[in-house]
Length: 292
Image (cartoon, rainbow, N blue to C red):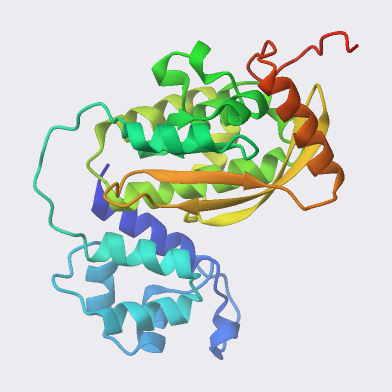
């Protein structure tokens, strides 16, 4: 992906969100050619020359200082995640070009997952590929063992599997979060050809993805809550925490927890009991077996 184009589109989209009136800029009659702030208005508010800001927005400003990025971020009212994304695009880290191999998870991490019998847990790799999981995660989310490697990917499951809309009652929020994470990854690794392939595939087959991707929203995967509807036990609202395993900058350990004493805890315990008995599982189970 073109880093300069990403930077231009991102800053343009953020400028469009800010009204001149928010900065005390008087707007007189007549139509403005662009929504939100003009480049020269942003430059003035940030304390830089209009020419320099144009070069920054076009990715042509070398050695841009953090102070200038902070000033621009302040005018645009960027979130913390958006500020990180801006820094990644405007001040890219110099990396050696190397061939990316198939990503693998350490055996020790799989043993850690297996030991977490009462907590759904899995490990995400690049582009939200699912690299490892425990039994309860497979029972709750998907039977990853039955999926091809390419299909063990959260964005593909969210946007290309019709059953995901029933599995996630608040599908729109999950979709927005997923796209936001992919945007953040694109800022970190703009030269990833597999990411470009994934974005192209999702853009072709999912109109919803195309709309969300064009918004240029970014979000780092950290923590939060989501509700998942399991056909056997019903709704389970989980709180998720995301941790980075030491020595694995491209991997994330994700764990799900439920509120003690809640219906979600009861439902998860029921699911865990069936999992322990090694009952049959299926991807986004559509039909519940006859219960005893």
